[in-house]
Length: 140
Image 1: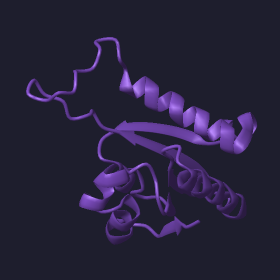
Image 2: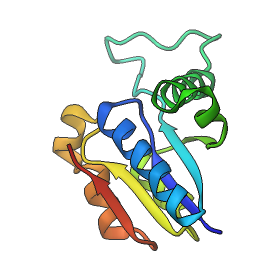
Image 3: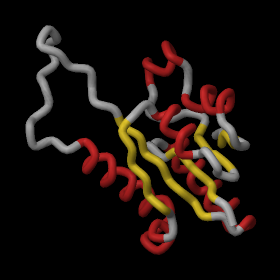
Image 4: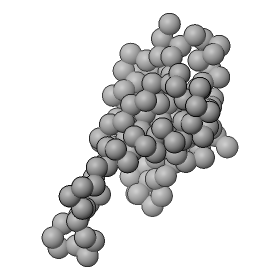
């Protein structure tokens, strides 16, 4: 039995990737690890954007978002069968790190990347070029 890692950011594409990964795991007997990655927003004293409130816990917010996405996509019972991993860091790099030793890495073709992805390249493009395991990109 192995492990399938899937990137889940709550976008429609990542939910499709999650469902695909779960179906694949049913065929192979692998476990599914859903990964949500977050980064601190860029703020500074010189920007017009205010700093984060002291009681703001981005890890807690990301964990709640991942749990909600899993339950919405798979139901409570299906979500309970998936290992949830929330990490701080760049999404592509976090997925590459988590997928070391995995049988498969699954990502959606488009996530919540927006304009940043246009400048830096998409997560799916980056992981297909650098992963140490097979990668499936689930398209619409």
